[in-house]
Length: 133
Image (cartoon, rainbow, N blue to C red; front, top):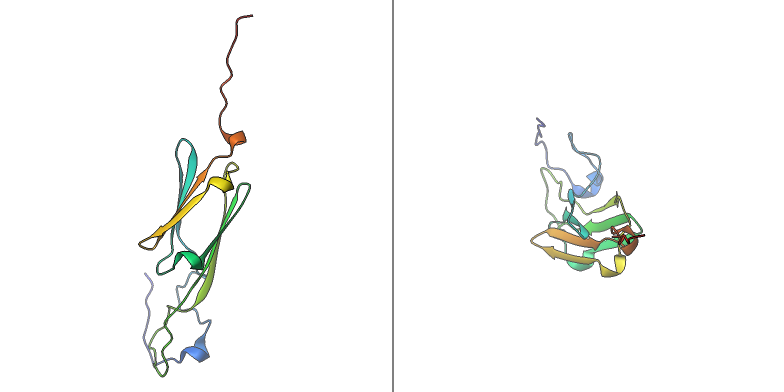
């Protein structure tokens, strides 16, 4: 269990980049990746972000999710602890098969990004009809 101890007020401008004990070393957005019969579905936590603050790039079987979280700026406020700092984050996911980026759909609702990536035509199973010989 991680314990945080509040001490004297810290000024944000002097401690930018400060990582408290137990910090995971970076801002990583948690994701769930699943698939159904014709697409991969990626769900990522992006609390407080608007659709124009999230960037999605797709190249074959690689999906890149990138964004910047913004923090409230308050003049003259002294913080005892500050973890809601502006930060860039990025997740790069390699899927088992290529996807059709032209038909991808992304929505953000209640801080959850849902990305639906249809399988590429060459990745879909093909049925071969057997003829009598």
